[in-house]
Amino acid sequence: MDELLMIPGPVPLHPRVMNAMAKQMINHRGDEFGRIMDYCVERLKEIFATENDVLIISGSGTAGMEAAISNFVSGKLVCIQNGKFGERFVKIGKRYCESVVELKFEWGTSIDLEKVEMALSEGAEAVTMVHNETSTGILNPAREVAKLAEKYDALFILDAITSAGGDEVRVDDWGVDVAVVGSQKCLGAPPGISAVAVSERAWSRLTGKAPYYLDLESYRNSLEKTPSQTPYTPALPLFFALYEALKIIEEETMEKRIKRHRMLSEGCRKAMTAMGLELFPELNDHSRYSNTVTAIKMPEGITDDQLRGTVKKEFGVIIAGGQDILKGRIFRIGNMGNVGVKEMITTISAVESVLYRFGVVKEMGRGMESAMEVYGG
Ligand SMILES: Cc1ncc(COP(=O)(O)O)c(C=O)c1O
Image 1 (spheres, rainbow, N blue to C red):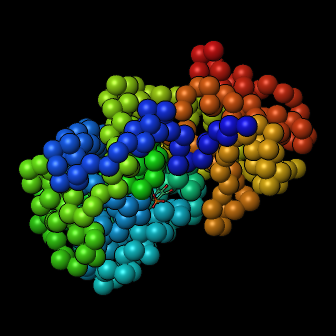
Image 2 (image 1 turned 135 degrees about the horizontal axis):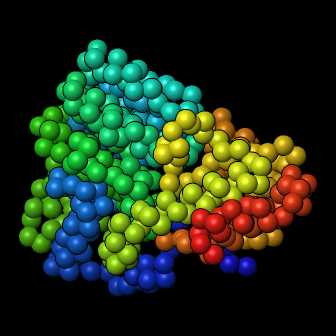
């Protein structure tokens, strides 16, 4: 049985993207690669809504996060965290920065902007935040934190790994100094590439302490060559795939893509609550739910293994569990990349059927009906 991958990345690939990888290798210092690189940079600038430099790294999202910190911060770093990926910035920060202030909020709750302001008012070189906290299904307030960072002259480093390409990320309008995206999420490409958008303010604060492979100045210098290139041999098949994935985004347009992600996640949230399940994030402001992943509390009467195991075994649908402290307590459904109503409906009905079978849901069809109200079927 073909499996349907509905985790928050990696995502199922469009056949055009898969085919793009089955191509002969080319000279990575030649014109053809230069054209691929130029196109990818141009498209990523649109996705980030920025005129800033965009550098592409052969390395997953975490490589982009490490580049973001190591190139631009060596003194005091404030890390906002309300989930697993917020914590990752802390771990990276401890390797490169003199001090790291951990601004912790309970997983699944919103961040408190007053506390962020208080921390920044005590002085910091930079502040990090995860825009779309994949571990908990929360969209954090990037625009608001960017304003605070500017007020206190701190760089704003934003993990947009699971928002860019699926949700609004406005680097220039918001004032994000360093933004990171990963290929295997909303961009709809295979894993292994990350891209980093860097503002002039960030460039003026280069630490000179980045790891050799992640030194972004060398990426910028290589990009300025003719033809454009990368400092070290790029993962060519992944670049071929990224190029095609970005073509698909251009054809769809970012406006429609964002609308589609929002509609798919809204339908998922409505379906889950109509079945009597509870969403994991506790939010007063509903616009703070992630538009690319839904986190749901594991209901009474079924275990994680039973739910995800049966959904996989009987329907071939792969959904994600909780991470770290949330293991067994939540499950997550991704709607990133090129998935559509068909995939969401398949996933929702698989979950609903299994919950019905285990007696968790007493009546079949409520979830599907609510989803279809959103999807217009
Ligand atoms: C928000 C966020 N940040 C960072 C990462 C890490 O990215 P990668 O696994 O590509 O290194 C992930 C991966 O799931 C993520 O969801």
